[in-house]
Image (tube, rainbow, N blue to C red; front, top):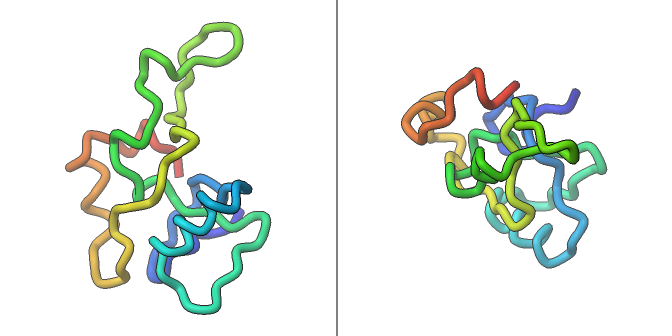
Length: 105
């Protein structure tokens, strides 16, 4: 399983880069890595997204209407937390209301 594409982050559970060229470009701007071209498996881990970027629990259901255990990102989500290797990525989850049991790594 690939690691997070942000420098200094070793997260392994996240969202792959979007295929939509416009949204993909926004992600690339946010992660700010020169000459970085994401592979098909490249991802940004969940700790780099805001709580508001996730589908609300009331809507996070599978096709059968059952509540999903794993949080899902909204299709328009853009990474915004801990984008610099000088910030501590481990402190963000609990302060934003996302616990380590909910966001699988």
